[in-house]
Image 1 (tube, rainbow over the protein chains, first blue to last red):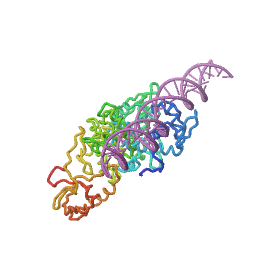
Image 2: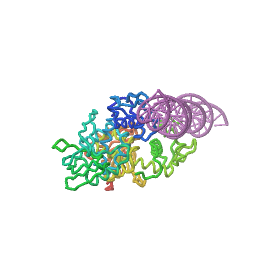
Image 3: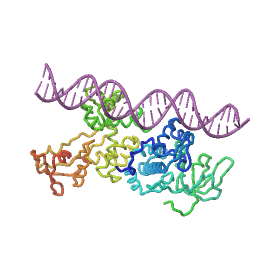
Image 4: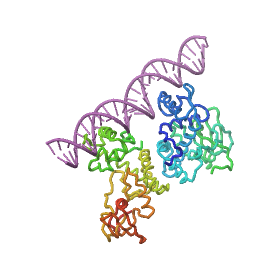
Length: 236
Length: 236
DNA sequence: TCGGTGTTTTAGTTTTGGCTAAAATATAAA
DNA sequence: TTTATATTTTAGCCAAAACTAAAACACCGA
C-alpha cells in the first residue's frame, strides 16, 4: 500500500538478519555465520539456514563456508530498517521521554511494524533530523548515509578540542549502563570537550567538558565515545 | 520488562483472535467460528484450531459447536489491545496527520509491537484522552470502559437535537470510504445535529448541522453514525 | 603436511499458524 | 420427522524459523 517496494514485505526475521549483516560490515565486507548468530542470539545452524533463504530472495551473496555479504538490494533493505530504527529512537527519546537504556529495545520491535508511510510522517514531525540522539547518522530515503568522520576518543591527543559525535551502543551487547553513565554526566553527542590526557598505559582518557568539569574515562567508556575535530561545521 | 503481566507476551495472532472475539460480543455473549473467521479473513478450520489453543491458555471458554466467549483474563487482554489501538489511532491522526482511511490498518500492526510502557507514555503525551477520534471510548489501564450511551442515527426522531458520539468503522469490513465521506462533511464526533426527518420507507435520515447545512443520509451512512441526546454533558 | 580446534553445514525435530478436503453436526424448511 | 443447507470440526498437509546432534570443513601451529 504505502510500501516503497512492490514485492511482499520481508518478514521481520529477514529484516533482522539483513540489518545484522549490515551492522557487521557485510555491506562492504563479509559477515561470518558465527558473528551473525551471536549478534542475533540464535544458533549457527539457524543462520546457515536463513542465509540460504536470503540468497534466494536476492538479499545476500553467499557461498557455504564463505561468509555473507549484502547485495545492493540487501543493503537498501538494511538501510531502510536502520532509518526506521534511528527515527523511532529519536521520537521515543524526544517526545515520549524514554531513557537511553529503554529506547533500543522498543525501537527494535517497532521498526518491523511501522510502514514507510509512518516512517516518513514521523521524519517530518521530527523535522528530518540528520542524526539520532546517539549521534548516529540517519540514512536518507534513497539509502544514502552521511560518511562517518569520527574517531574513538582514545585516538585523540592531549590538548585537542573535540565535539562528541556519537556514543556507540555496541549493538546486541547490553551496554545500556554505559549509556546511562555517560548520559547522566552530559557526555552526549554535541558536547564539546578538551582532551586532557590520553594514557596509553591503562587506557584512561581524561577530558574536560564545557562546564570545566573533568572526567576520567576508563577503556570501556573511552571506546564508546566517538568524536570529531571541533570546527564551526554543520551539526545541523 | 515493562509488561504489566508476568506471563510471556501473547503472540500477535492470539491478540487478534481475542480482540476479534471481544468485538463480536464475546465479552458478554458468544462469538461463532464463522464470525471470527470472516472478521480475521481466515479459514474456519484455522479458527477452530486456535480456539483450542486459546482455551488452553485460559483466554476463552469454548466447547465444540458451541461458540466462544472470553474469560476474565481474555477480556482484559482484549481491552489492553483495544486501549493500545485507540491510543495509537489518536496519535496517528492528531500528531502524524494520518487520514481516517489509513489509520486503522497502521494501528492494527502497531498495537502488537508496542510495549505497555510505550502505550502509557503515549497516553500521557496525548493527555489521557477518553475517546479516540472516532468517538470510541478508550479503555483505562485497569480494563474499565466507559458505558456506551449512544444509539444509531436511525433510532432518532424528527426534531431531536443530538450530538455525534461516534462513527462506527465497522471493523474488518473496508468501509473507509464512509469515514472519508463523513469526515469531509464535518460529520464527526462532537458535532451537533438536529434531526430533520427519519424516513422508514427508504432508511434515509435528513439532518441539519451546526452551520445550517442539510445532509440526506442513506441507510449505510445513517447506520454508521451514533449519537446521544444533546446535553451540556461531559465530552471532555 | 598433519592434527587439532573451532566454525559451518547437514539432517532431523519442533512450534505456530495457516491451508484444503472430507466428515460430522446443527439448524431451518418442508 | 425428515431432509437440505450451512456451520463446524477433523485429518492431513505446508511454510517459516527456530532448535540439537552429528558430520564436514577450514585454518593455525607444530
